[in-house]
Image 1: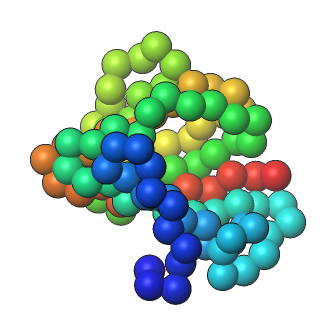
Image 2: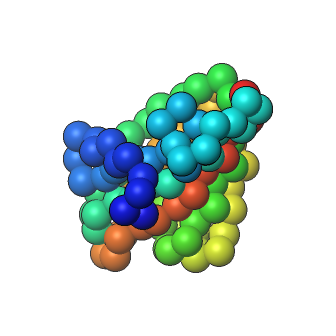
Image 3: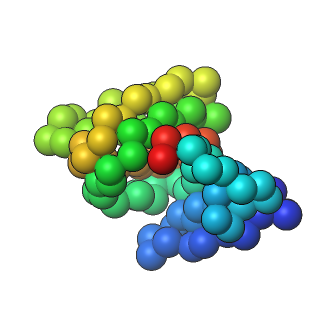
Amino acid sequence: APCLKWYPGDAGYATADIVGDDGIAAGERIWFGATAMAPGSLYPLHRHAPEELYLFLTLGAFRGDDEVWQDIPAGGAVYNPPWRTHALKAGSAPLVALWFLTL
C-alpha cells in the first residue's frame, strides 16, 4: 500500500489505482485498484460505463440501483454491470475492497 497513490474521498474513504493511469502498472483493457473506508463511512452512489467486479477483503455492504443494502462477507464478490448505480458502506469496522473494471 505505501507505493500506491491514494486519493481521499469526501467522507472517510480513499481509492488507489494498482493497474491504470496512476497505478504501479499500466493497463490497456483493465483498471484495477483498491478502496479503503473508515468505519461508518459511505462511498456514495455512482455509476460508470465499464462493468466492474468488487472483491471484499473485509466485511462491508453494497447497494445497487434502488435495492436494499446487502452485507458482503470478507472474500465475497459483487458483479456490477455497466451503468448500474451503486454504493459501498462500511459497518463498525474498516472496509477494504479491490475493484476491477474492464475498459
